[in-house]
Amino acid sequence: MMNETQKRWQLLIIFNVVCLAAGWWYSQGNAAPPETKQPFANAVQQRESMIRLLQESNQLLREQNQLLKSGKLKVQVSESR
Image (cartoon, rainbow, N blue to C red; front, side):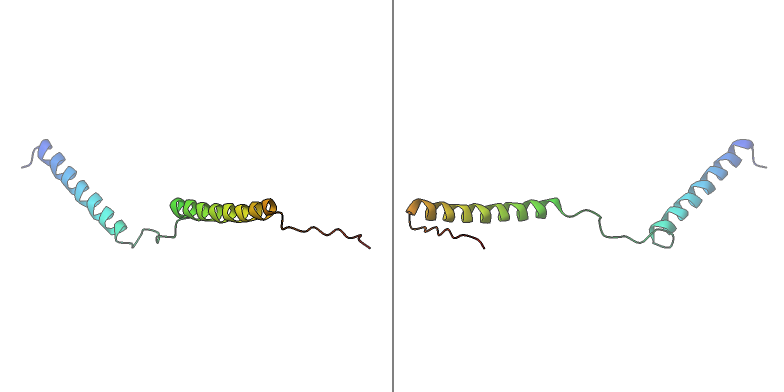
């Protein structure tokens, strides 16, 4: 005949086995929701893109400044109708 302590240990072991089985079943995808794409973009890629665009803008500004400083720029003003 089992004493009270042995019954408690058996219940504890059975409970642990059930919890482990439930966790395994959930992790296998039967109950877990499907993985979705992250809602946020990759921050590193965003920074690289921003840096590249800023470098392009800086290059265009340098070209405009060179044109303005060269004196080869002609401005023509006309009256709008």
